[in-house]
Image 1 (cartoon, rainbow, N blue to C red):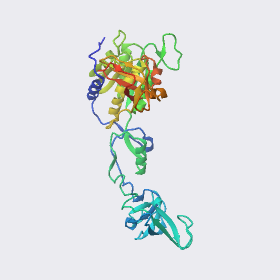
Image 2: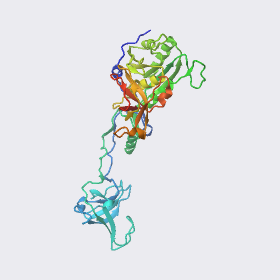
Image 3: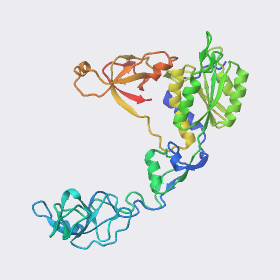
Length: 435
C-alpha cells in the first residue's frame, strides 16, 4: 500500500507535473481548412498574397479626389461631375480626373486617380439639364453630385495589404483555430493546412461495482459515469479519447491493461482507486509503468484530494478520484493543461469568467483550496433594492456531495475559495469560472 505523500497546493502540483513532461513537437497531419475548427496549427501559416489585393471602398459612396472636397459644407457645397459607376468584381474602365466622381459600392475596386470615398450621406445627386432616374441610370443631361462634407486622403478606403501583407505570418504555430481564422484562411485561398494530431487519451474506470450504462444495475451496482464525462472533456479540449472500459479491482489486471494502454496513448487517466484505503491500488499500478513515476499523490483541494500525478517514461498518467464530480473538476484543472501541452498550444487562454454576487454563505475549511458549484441567476427585484450597486447576476451555491453528478450538471460554473480563507459571505462579489 502506497501512502499519501505531502499534499501539494494545486498550482504548485500542476507546475511540477507539467515541468516533468518532456517538451516535443506534436505529431502533425494535413487536413482541409474547412474541417480544422478547434484544431491547433502545427506550423506557421504565411499569406501567399496581400489582403486586400487591391484598393477597395469600405462603404457605399463616390470615389473622388479628396482635394476636390476641401472646403465643402452644407452651406457651401462643392460640385463634381459623375463619370461612371464602378462595377462589382471588375476593374474600372475609367480614370477619375480633377472635378470628377464615380459611384462605388462597398468592396468595389477604387478607380485610378481617386484617393478617397465620400459617403452617400454626405452627397446629393442631381441632373443638370435633365431628369435623374436613379443612381445608376439617367436620362439626358449631365449627372453631378453635390458634396456637403470635406474628406481626407485615404478616407473610407481599404488599402492593399492593410489586413495582411504577402509573406506575413497570419497564424503562428500552436494557435487554436476559430471561425475567424477559418474565414481569413479562405480569403487567402489556403484550402489545406498542417495541424497537430489529436493526442490519444486512454480512459480506464476501475471498480467491481461499475457496469456499462446500457445495463440495468442490480443492488450495489452503479452505471459508469466517469468514462463518459472524461471522454467528453477530452474531446472538448482537443484530444482523442480511447475508451478502455471498466476494470475490476484487481491489481495485476490493472497493471497489465494500464501498461498496454500507455504504450498506445499519450496520456492515461485512471479513475478511482487513488485514495488511502485498503482496496485502492491505482498508485501501486502507476508505479510499475515507468520512471520517474508518481510526482504528486494528494492535492490540497476539495473536491479531489486523492489525485495522483505521474510521469512514466515520458508520458503523463493521472489517477482521478472515483466520485464523478471530483473526477470532472480535477480533470478540468489537470487533464486539460496536459492536452494543451501535447497539442503544442503556445497561447492558452484562461477559462471565461463572470462576476456575480453570492446569495448564500459558503463555509470552507482553512488550509485547503475549494471549488464550489454555483448556478447563475438574474437577481430578484427585492434583492436589488437591498444593495446600492448595479449587478447583472447572482451566484447561488449548489451544496452537494461529490458523487452526485446532476448537482454539477445543474451548475453554470465554479467558484474558487482560496486556501487561506474560511469561506465567503453572502453578498460578496465572486468570480465564477464558467464550465
